[in-house]
Length: 476
Ligand code: BES
Ligand code: MN
Ligand code: ZN
Image 1 (tube, helix red, strand yellow):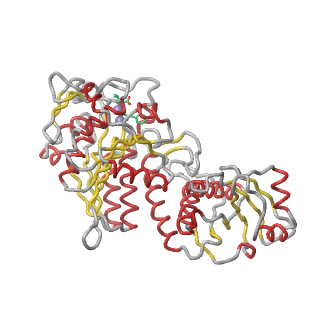
Image 2 (tube, rainbow, N blue to C red):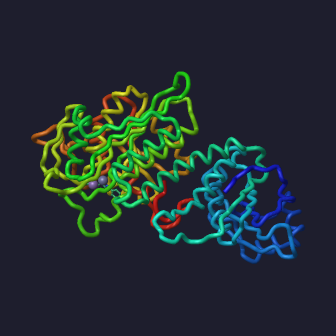
Image 3 (tube, rainbow, N blue to C red):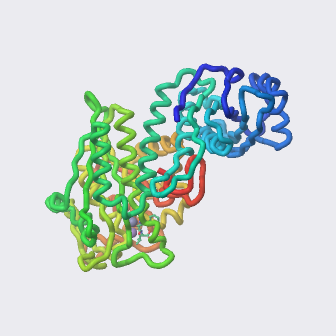
């Protein structure tokens, strides 16, 4: 599929499907659309009246243009009321993409209003929405579903946006990689294949790659990570990819992702109804990190970025951690493992210590860390904890532009009492109330002074039903 911004005026565009975006309660046809309606013998105004189309966010109506017209179908899509919410454009483009498949349109013209006087941002969001909505995962089907593919998408009225569309393609390649990694089953995505994927990204996009094997992790004293890994028959892999810009970097950042390719819970095994069969998603943070590596390697910002994940499975065997074991992390802190199912924070502890030693200006970790965060914020919203207001505000702003919802949560120091251990420096698990907060407080013990943010993505990593530009499944 090719997406391009063309100079072809709306009234002259020819092809299978022409999509027009309208704001809620502003569906009167004005400007060009008056003429278009006339060219099509008034079917646009008839369609709006007959279907009572109001322009609500997510709504759409379609009509066939008869009489051998140069356009086969016209689609109207609603943009809602919030004219400042860029994500509504991304979502509208997703709706158009899905309609195009349903209406068997190979060529598509899209005419939406310009968001915030910014044609570049608008074109970028549309290009993202359409690609993310059209992505289909056929890797595990013996016979892929046949569908008429969209071949050509023309963005009308945005001027030349070649660079912006190229950037959107690069971002989407990262999102789609993350989706593919999360969706793949745990007998297909393992610590070994995660390391292979990192290596493939490194060679394709020119990143530096370091994979620490078990012995090297031992030498670094990563007792927390290795405690989690010790029951698995598969070797743990500590992945470290580095993107370095040409010249002196403006800043240095580390992105860390929780990388549990399967979380059985360990000896505190996940019981019936716990969603154990979904625990392939527990490497969603690592998948997002590798997706970010793929995207950033192509976007080439003037910032040095380290992509880090301590990848393993949380399994049971005669070698498994006992509930009650005391582990020593690579910063020397000791942890009493009162619950082997709170394993993610153990792997992240050593990853955080490793990242801080790189001397970066900020660290962000992404993790499917707690069911408690899903209870607090639901499936659509990630929890954000940070020791640094600047980093927290930047992440919040970025999430608004990207259409990914995050909500800042409190770092309530007093709750650390719930992690006090009579024997070791801390336990790994606190009481059930505030479980996502004590998880964040645990992580904080492994960052000394670098500005740091933790994002709990246990909810948004997966969606059971189609939602905006996400199909049911991994969201990326
Ligand atoms: N991987 C899970 C958290 C999770 C839950 C991810 C739902 C995705 C969807 C994590 O390792 C876990 O098991 N957390 C426990 C922590 C508890 C033992 C303190 C939980 O949330 O129940
Ligand atoms: Mn767990
Ligand atoms: Zn887990």
